[in-house]
Image (cartoon, rainbow, N blue to C red; front, side, top):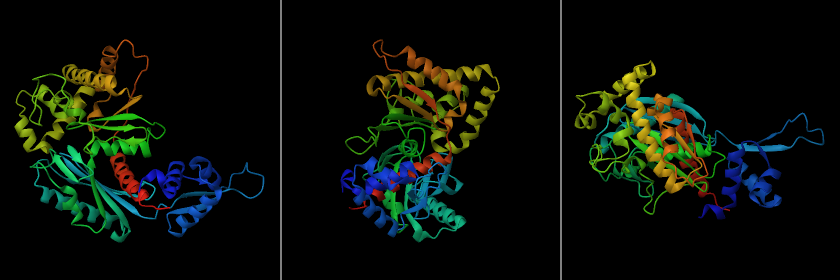
Length: 393
C-alpha cells in the first residue's frame, strides 16, 4: 500500500514525530477529520501501539487537562546490527527508537557470508538474552553494511566485509530468524536516523557523508531516503576526484575514499603500508589510525598536515556534490571524524574555494558526533517505517 494513502500511517508517523500530541493536533497536522482520528487512535490503542496520558499542564486552567498520545515504547523491539571492518555492533531499540541495550563483538573484513551471518545471529540472540527481551517481541532486524547494497533485493553486490560479491545476505539472515529481516547501506541508516531522531528532523533535504574505513553517503530528498533506479543509494566514496589517481580498495583508481578514508591517511604516513594487507586484515590497522589521530590532535605538525590534506580532498569532493545536488546541509559523521576540525575546517575552506560564483546559497557543513545509537536508531527507523506502511485504513 502507498503510505501516503494510509490514514493509520499518517497518524502513527505524526505521533512519532511529536512524541506527546493531542488528537486535535493530530487532526490539524494530518488533515484528517476529528472523528476519523478518534476511530483510528482507538484501534491503535487496542493494538497496543499507542498510549495516552493527561497533559497535566499547569497553565491549562480551562476544563479538563488535554489528553495526549504517544507511541507505546513496549509495543515491540527492533534489532540493529552494523558490520564494519573491525567490529560488529548490535543494539536493541524499543518501539519509540530508544536504545535499550547494545553490545560489540570482534569482526574483520573479507569474511565468508555464512560466517558473517552466524556472527550476526550470535550477536542478536546474545543481545536479546542480556536485555531479557523475548524473541517473540522482536518486530524486525536490520543489518547495516558498507558497500553497494540493494535494500529492495536484499543483495550486497560488493562490500569489503565479505570475501565475495553478489551476496544475498538478507536471505542468509532471514533463514535464521522468524521475524522480518532487512539489509541496508550503513550510511543510509545514519541518514534515516538523523531524519527521524536527530538534527535532520526538521530538514526536508540533506546529505550525510560518513568518514571511516571508507567514505559513504546517505541522501534525504523531500523527506525521503534517496535510492537510485535500481534501489541502490549514491556511492559518493567511489566517485572520482583524480583520474588514474591513487588505488582504491574497490579495484579502481582516484576514488574519494582513496584520498580521505582511514586507510588513505595511513597510506600517507606509513611507507610500508600495503593496501592488500589492509584488505586482508583491516581490523589490525584500526589501532594505528586511532593512534595517529591522537598524535595529530596532540600537536604533531606532520600528521596534522596529512589530515588537513585529506580534508581538502574531501572539500573538493563535497564541492562537486553541492554543484550537482545543492543540499542545504551536509552532515559529516563516522569514526573518521574523530579528527574533528583537522579534517572539517580544510573541507569547509575547499568547499568555499570551489563554489560556483553564482551560487548565493551556502551549504551548512555540520560535524555530527558518531555513536552506536545513531545507526541503531537508523535501523529502527527502517524497520518501523516498513511496519507503518503495513498499517491499513
